[in-house]
Length: 510
Image (cartoon, rainbow, N blue to C red):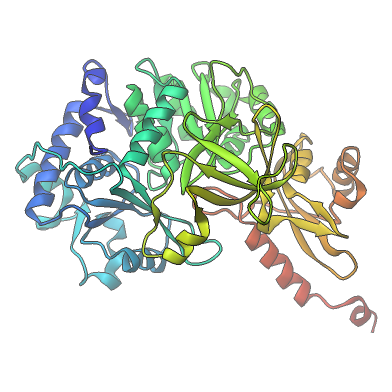
């Protein structure tokens, strides 16, 4: 098998419609397939073969997908790199995975310049013999895909590295195929659908769960080069988009977009959120402002997706839950000794399924710590109810222990989101001399009229006193990582620096 076979498998679905829309241009399946075969032939002529790593550093484009399928067809391993990274970060990934080649956009050539003598680069919008377009036009087509084992590596996704050096997550051909097939089947993505891809293809969620699953089902994909609420609105209305997937931040920005009422979203039938917890208050707000439900999905790069909802069975899902285990997948809640706990008890979530990672590239220690008897330790804390729904309460490292009692940031954030003037929020724990830790909330306001006391009063109607924030700081925006996740670590660091710079009360009185 080979993941690139997917392209040939779905050819008949696109006989009378585009495979893609990019920048408003319809692109046929035949054109993509022809370009893939030519680039495959060129890669073979350059000696790229089974097991080689090829770095892919490009913005979303038709060329990105052509490059992906061509690399896979020769049996090589794709290493997608987030185009939002800096030069040093890209070089760290390249140094670790030791690629035989890099395929890059012209603007990223200089980012990899420190390693220019280690591997050749094929450049989109470049010049000379290494120009991507010139290569594809002049290459001899190669019609055969290298057949590999289902367990062979197809891609290596490097984690964001917010808690240390990024780790390379190895995803096999079998795992990618399962993700795409199971997602399209479960979500009932078919030939009548038009699917909008808002996130970078350098991440497994937009690539495998959104884009490849849409191809597998026969949906036309509207591929956006970058996320912006206006671009989303225009695409949904113009292309009558029926399916989209994003992270909570994207949906928050869409709901807060000032020109939203000018656009028609009536075509949308399925919207999925993943990558971070989606509070029920945001789901309800989306229904009111966007006119459609958003369903939560959960997983992680090491094994994704694991839980979601069945659109045929669930009208809205269960508030604050990210659903049940998907077909072939499972999760369990365990204590500190990795022993299963009873339903309703908080513990670490472990997960498993056919799309589980093969391990971390060149990192056996981290692999052994994370993979245990076919299960992945997620680092997320959660609860399972009697019906099999998963409720996430936060990351282990984000747990706040105040006066010996556990305080889960997600619980407080969900209450904050029920206030109509809260656009976005994040809760962290900070050191406290008396209680061990105190609760601080960062809030992005919809209006400057919202004040701290009003929000505290709002929270006190729902939360126990020990869970109430001791401080609320209003900010213009929250720091986010490359996937749109809020970076609590940066908020903690910022608060710590401020505390160190502030004089103590005694010093202030002198």
